[in-house]
Amino acid sequence: MDFSLTDEERAVRDTVRSFIRREVMPLEAEVLRRERAHQPGLDHSEVRELQLKARKFGFWGLATPEEYGGMDLPAVLQSLIWTELGHTFVPFRFGGEADNILFHATEEQKQEFLIPTIEGERRSCFAITEPGAGSDAANIRLSARRDGDDWILDGEKTFITGGHDADFAIVVAVTDREKGARNGGATAFLVDRSMGWRSEFIQTMGEGGPASLIFDGVRVPHRNILGEIGQGFTLGMEWIGKGRYTIPSHAIGIAERVLQMAIDYANTRETFGTKIGANQAIQWMIADSETELEAARWLVLRSAWTVDQGLDPRHASSMGKLYGAGMVNRVVDRVLQIHGGMGYTRELPIERWYRQVRLYRIFEGTDEMQRLIISRDLLRGYTKIGGHLA
Image (tube, rainbow, N blue to C red):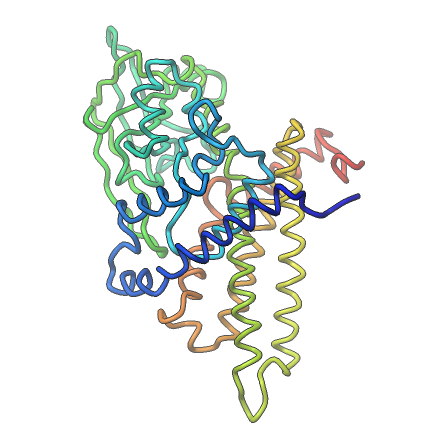
C-alpha cells in the first residue's frame, strides 16, 4: 500500500504552495490591518487580480471541465490544493469556478449564467437554507407558484454565503407542497437580482458574513428553471456534497500553519529562564495536535479518493468533514493557549482563525448531521465497518 503522492500531485501541490507564499501571504499584514479597521480584507478587484495572476500559472477552474477552460482536476488533487489555500487567512481562492450544479443548465442558461460566472464576470450564490430549514433542508417553505409562463417566488432564505454580493441566486423553492421537497416537490430557479429580490447582510463572529435573501412576489420566467421541475432537492444535496471534502481539506491547511506557529513560538518564547517548549504541558498540546492533524489528513484524502474511484462518497466524506472540522477547532484552541495573551490579540491571526473555524462545524452539514449519516449508514447496513477494506 503506497501512501506517497504521485509526481503530478507533488508538482501541482508545490506550484500552488509557491504561488501562495509568493503572491498571497505577503498580503497578510495588510489584510489584518484592514480587518482591525472593520474593512474587507481584500476587495473584489484585488481578489480578481490575484486570480488572473494564478491563471498565468495555469490554475483556473480547478473542478471546471476542460471544455469550459478549466482544469477538471481529480478530487485528491483538489483536496491537496485546498489544503495549500488553508495556509493563509487571506480571503483568496482560485478563479474559473462555478457552482457544480450550474452544469445542469441548458445551453441558453449556460451562456447567461454559467460561462460569465466561470469568467468572473458574474457572481452567484446558492440559496436553500431558511429560518426554519437549516439542517432539515427538506423543510423549506419558500414557494414558487406557476403564473402563465412565469413562476412567482415568495419567502426568505438565510445564511446564504455570498448572498449580499451575488448578481444572481440559485434558489430552491417549493413547487408542489403535497409531494414535499424531498419527494419531487422542490425546484431550482436561476434568479437575477434585477428580478426583484433583495439581500440583508448578517453580522457574524467571523470576518465577512452571509445574507438573508427576501423574495416578495419575484417573477421568474419558466426558462430559468435549473434542471427539471421537482429536481430541486436532489440538486441541493449535490451542491452541499461538494463541500464535504473541500472544507476539511482547507481545515488541514489551517491546522498545519497554526501548529507550525506554535512550534516556532515554543522554541523561542522563554518563561522562568527556559523555553516554553521544554514544558510537558506544551509538548503534549503539540503532540496531540500533530496526531489529530495526521488522522484528519488521511480521512479527508480517503474521502476524495472515494470520489475519484466513482464510489459513493457520502459515508467517507461525512467522517472526513466531522473529524476535520473538530480537529481544526481543537488545534487552533491549543495554539491560542500556547501563545497566551498574544494569541488573543488581533495583532496575530490566531484569534481570527479561532473565529473562522468555528463555522466549519456548522455549515454544509453540522457535526450532528454528519454523525446521523455515519450511524445511519452502519445501522441500516448501507456500509460496513472498515469501508472499502472490509
